[in-house]
Length: 345
Image: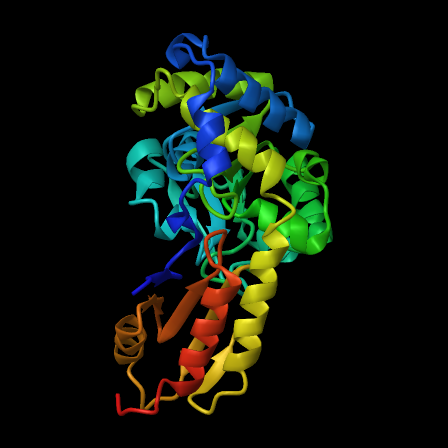
C-alpha cells in the first residue's frame, strides 16, 4: 500500500520537470565560484529580497550556524525564543561553533515581542554580563505549528536592534510559507534583517539546499566560514538548478498545502478524542489528545494505516502537508482520522 508521509515537508521528491532542469544544468566548480547555475541562484535570491549578496549552503543548519558565527564573538549572547530551531535542533552548534551563550525568551508559539527583546538585552556597562550581539527569530515557527510573525512586530524589533548595535538574523526555513499566507513581499524582510537563511528543500520541494542572504561584507565572510565548516561544494549547480526551478514554480502553490492543513485541523477540532488544535496558518498542524490516549499509540495506529505522523513532546502531535501530499491522500487521511477508533487502541 502507498505510504502517506506527513512527518515533514522535507520528505518531498523532485518532480519530473525539476529533475529535467537538474540534469540540464550547466555546472562548474563552486569552491572557485565558477558554477554558473549556483551563481545564478545566489543572484536570484539576493535580488528577490533586495539584499546585496547570497551564498548557497548544503543545509539550513549550516547556513544558520554560519550566520551566528558572523554576528557574534565567543562569550557574547544570542537572544532567541525558547522553541527556536537554532537552539533546540542544531546540535548545540551556537555554543560549539561560536562559543556564545543563549538567552531564551518565553514567547508565544515561538514568537516574542519587541518589549521582551528590550527586557532581555544585557546592559553593556555591566562587565559581569555577556554582551548581547544577536537576535535570531524563526519564521514560520516549527514548534509553534507554522505560526507567522507579525511584520509590524518584526519592524519594532529591527529598530531596537539597530539602536543597540545588535545584529538581527532570520531563520527563514519556511519563510515562503509565511510570505504566501500573509501575502507579503520578500523585500519587506530584506529591509529588516542583517542576514536571512531560506530553505529550498521544505515546502519548495528541492532535494537539498539553503541560501544565506546579506550584505556583500557578510557574505564574503560567510564564504570563508562555509569552507571552515566543511560546506565547500564542487559541481553543485545540479542542486542549485532545483532551487531555481522551485522558486520559479513552487512558491504560489504553497497555498494548496495550507488549505489541506486547515481541512485536517477543522476535522480534528470536531473529533472527541482531540482536546486542542493549534491555530493553523500554513502547512503544520499540531494537536493534543485526551489524557486517556497515549500519543505514541495513536501514531502507531496511524502507521498501521500507512500514514506517518510525528510526536513533538509534551503530548503534541504534528502533521505537515507538502508538495507530494495529494488530494486523494488527504481524503484517506481524513477518513482514517474519523474512523481511527473503530477498533481498540
